Every structure is written in C-alpha cells, then in structure tokens.
Image (cartoon, rainbow, N blue to C red; front, side):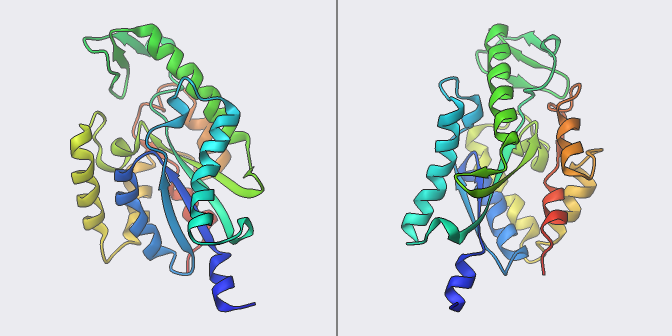
Length: 235
C-alpha cells in the first residue's frame, strides 16, 4: 500500500457548530495528532436545536459534511477513519424548573437557569434537543464510519473561554486568542481541559455522559473532550 493511501486512511473528521469553533480547535488537534489527517467541518449552527430536524435528517447533515470532504479530496469512504462530533449541551438536560421567564426573545444562559420571554419555547427546544442528542449518542457509526461524541457545556464558548452568552461578533476574536494561547505548546490544551474544564466529569466515556445529563450539569462549565486524548493516544 502506498504511503499516500496509509495517510488518507487515518483521516479524522471533527464536526462542530461554527467556524469559530473550528478556528479555536482545528490547529491544536492537527499539531497534537501529527500522524493523522485532522479536519474540522462545521454545520452552520446546532443541528440538534433545529426544530425541523429529524433523526434521519441529522444523520444526513453529519454525513454530508464528511461526504463533501471525500468528494473534494477524491477519497473513498474507507479512507475516513473516524467522525468525532462535539456537541454544545445548551442546558438541554436541566429540569423545566430551571427555565424562567426573562426579558428577551433569545435564550439567556447562566449556570443555574435559562431565561426567555417564551418559557414554552425553551422547554420544547430542550425536549427536541435531548431527543436528537440521545439518538446520535446511541450510534456508533454514520453510514459505516466510526462515530463518537463529546460535549461542551453549556457550550464551547463557556467551556473554553468561560463566557456563556458571548456575542456572535466576538466569537472569532475569542477563538483566535484561544488558539494563540496554545500555539507552539498545543499539548498543554489537554492539561487545560483536565484541570480547568472537566470540573468533576468522570474519566470514563459512558459515565461522563451520564453525569452531564443529571441536575444542572448541562448548564455548568464542563467537557468530556479530555477523554478523547485518553482513548486516542498520540505519538
């Protein structure tokens, strides 16, 4: 088998919500996993919060990002070793009592509650998001490609920057600054996740997902992304 073929068989596609997420993380993962071809693709928003999204459509939305890459690079599906999906939890698992009436049409998050003028809108969003996340979490492959899932709580901005309601215009600035902080010392990102972001999350993958679904944890600052590095050792 040619060297090129060996390299392409190690392609890993990370699925995130937006371009700023890609900016914050892609180069860090590429530097850590030099022996793999790490690619970040974003879905232009949270597919699990889309009220029109069905289970089948969610699978297609994820696979379409992978397939776009396969076509662009003239690969075959077997060249993709793994799909890694990073979810924002957005407080989806909190009890309805943690949803309160607020002053805005948009959802406003804290570590104890979600506020919005329309409480029922949040309740329905959470119900739908839980359903889709639980379904996707139950899958171990997408169209034959290994599929694994990790979370950022309450979202990536909260987990990485400790900012829960970050203005969209500032996301790029924060993402750039975050990568610059680890540039040239990317492996310290793993320590950062373990020491500042895991915040009591169990060190095993199944237990970490059970944890985030309890109480107010899906609003608090947590992530289980550190487990990825334990389950996928780097050279």
